[in-house]
Image 1 (tube, rainbow, N blue to C red):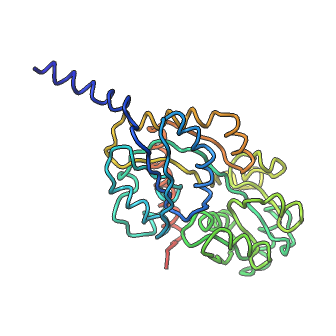
Image 2 (image 1 turned 135 degrees about the vertical axis):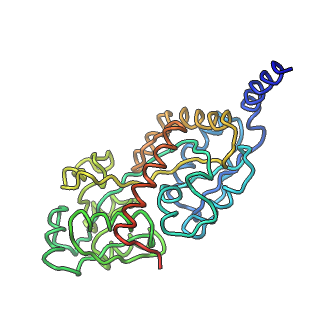
Length: 316
């Protein structure tokens, strides 16, 4: 009898993995339609669907800085048919700024980071500076006159601006907007002077002389702007800021299902057409293993928590 029970315990997960998925999989994106995450997912989704044999039904569900959609997925059945495409802040930042109904570290089964978007430091042409060092010198010579944009309080561009201020020992004024597009428009118009993040279609603005690329916000140079020095080269050796987008499933989703999803993504992002399109958009394919992703969440959540407390960052 005991042998039968043990055999059953071994065979059931295997059978589940073979049968899964038997119908389309819903993917909740906890932001508005057209987000960078949704755009990146739609590039790789057809290849993932081929490998799973089912469609991915992408469902934007914005609200509360990404917390509304995340809470819905955390409460969904753990059967592999509801996933979330979450961003860095869903798992490592928001718990330090919001009162949440769930623990973003323990409420999900990490599947894999699909792609990462390294941040870039940009400046308005209204600032007489062409390097990060010149921006820092300008800020020190004109205390309080330099401001920076973000897509909202508590978002990665906000924290990135705070990190530059902290590392360079300068004072900049934070100007939050409701969306990334608005903060970019403000940068182009000269309403703000500095922005750390991703600018869709940046090259056309750079070529036209409307904004300047100063450096990356990561330790390495990036393929999209090979001429731009890395954060390390610009004098910020500890800076490493990006936004990654990842699949997670509700806690308790069978390991066999999580592994099958990871394998589908890992294979899909190897496709040359996917990698080429990601490179054009400044996105870097990742597809790390579930255990590696889980460890990354814990480490980054701890680091961001310490930074937010030290800088006394709050959402009013």
